[in-house]
Image (cartoon, rainbow, N blue to C red; front, top):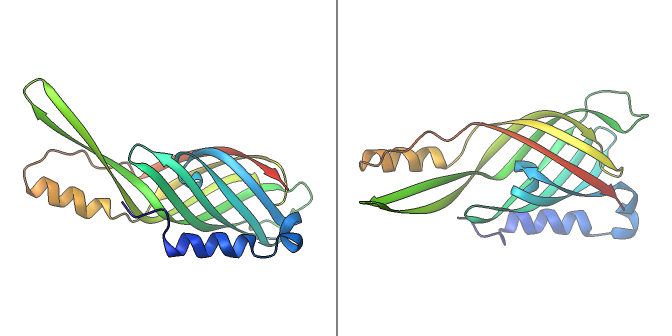
Length: 175
């Protein structure tokens, strides 16, 4: 598992919080489920970089421990009046957790491994700097889990392929 103190994550969080007085109107804090929240359950911090672009950094929990994400959301529509719209999402970070079970008779032990990769999605939600719900359908385009699964299958383990689709949902509050 990649440590949560990854330089990329620290740089993203530092950039989002560098000048809080200037950024306060464009910041949102989110709580939710899924990849944009760093794992199965987590939080994110979003910043409205432009009317059509939000950046985000996330920390969350999964079966292996802690997960993280950094990325952006693009709102292609020009309808900005209600601050809620459909969006495209690009994320990099913890996007797969693989369970590896070892059985000896009736006793089985499960271990989990986290993997990083690129995730793309489409969804609907509230832009950063505003309060409201969001939902996204995400596709894991790449993950280091693919190589690990191939390696373990070559060593005789039976593993299911990891799901490539993730559904996430959450609520964000403005500052």
